[in-house]
Image 1 (tube, rainbow, N blue to C red):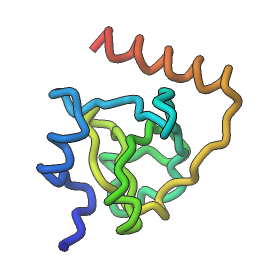
Image 2: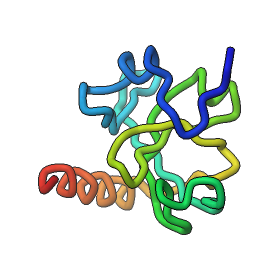
Image 3: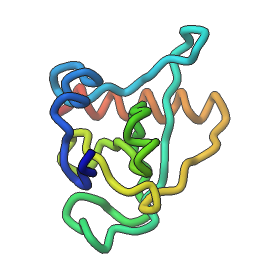
Length: 111
């Protein structure tokens, strides 16, 4: 299977999005909603799409993770695949995760 870096895999994007390319939350095995965030630590190959040291929402994509990629919502507001090495996952408290999720939701409402 060909890797898709900085591009959507159409079949996965369709399956994992809400029609706007912005599925924010995934679910755990117990059906609980989860939200993950990562910070960009390398944007050399995609400076227009990724801002260094910015926090991005990470969407669940098991196949991308197996391939060493991450699905993130970038500066375009759409979710795309990037190499996992471009990001560091953040271990956040539940309160911080809630606050960030609410902040991103407000941003979407304003857009």
